[in-house]
Image (cartoon, rainbow, N blue to C red; front, side, top):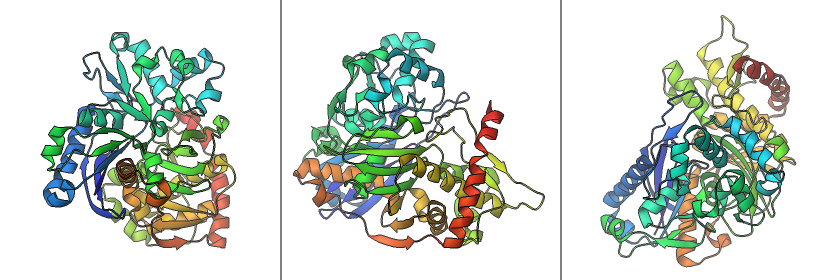
Length: 482
């Protein structure tokens, strides 16, 4: 048996898999986000630990014999979050998250400090990444910055609490802006631009490598026969790719989680910072990837549900499994700013085209379409389009959203088995590889396709025209936000 633990923004999830890689059981616990000021987004690191432990507690109570046989554990997690530890290893302040926009001013300072910044990191300095957050702390909370001994990403913090080992792997480290992504090593030059050194960083490992063992205390707590091997793991997107079998150059998927990701696997480092494309290491040795990132994907639907006072299922039900064409209303899903292709932390969302006749269904459809249009922006930024994509994340539950994505992107979209547990499943696969030494091709098989949606020519043409109109709204939203 193998265990995957995903430290998400809205929840921590634990997935138990068997020797064939099939999901045996899933448990999760919610996590809350604090937004004490505009642009801020924070969480308490100990809350991740408590949620992850509680999720595994549930699995151990439900399936004690299966959990007793766990041989390998992998962790995945939300990327970019800054956990600051002092010399006594105590957390110095709440973690600053991936969707925090306060450090947008520090991004320019980082790039100005090093002419080769983008060439080494492969990415634009964005406030979502980790390095600008630390520079913000240095300037706005200097007493805290002076006390920083180690900087850990969310899953690395949880791993340290579970094992005592401070280790980070390549995919998550790529999103710090401190990694030389081509060389798969910390960059002294990038660290110096952010007023840090290698001493502040954890050790590096590949995601499928064994890096520690679960502590004896937790092994006893969960009734495990021996403390399992713990793998390097992966950032949530790379872990999802492992879970989806997207390990070969050309493999692609769209994740509609809290944030949205359009992913393509590559055989080498292919940066394209001009269009805010992320070029990162994969969680597997010798493989890289490109990503276009939307900060509010399923989060947009969750916001609509909360604002309209109805559950998501209740909002979607009247729309059925298909619509005739674009909503008369347009929605920009920039609720927390946007990354690809705009790199704009301050822009905000909007509805356009409202009338006295506009009802709830038109608004909800516009939200689904707005996220799909943003995904099309990502598709253009990444370059040559794949022939088809798998759909993952919580949004993959919706047949309607899958159909809209197929029509908007002009691609075949596959709904897949276990699409909602991709990151935790991928983490379990990495734990398996670390424990058994099996190769990725054996472990990371593509999931069974539940349903495929091909673009309808008439709707696809209508959506192409609607997307062109939709793109003209960004300058208006930018002006309004400023």
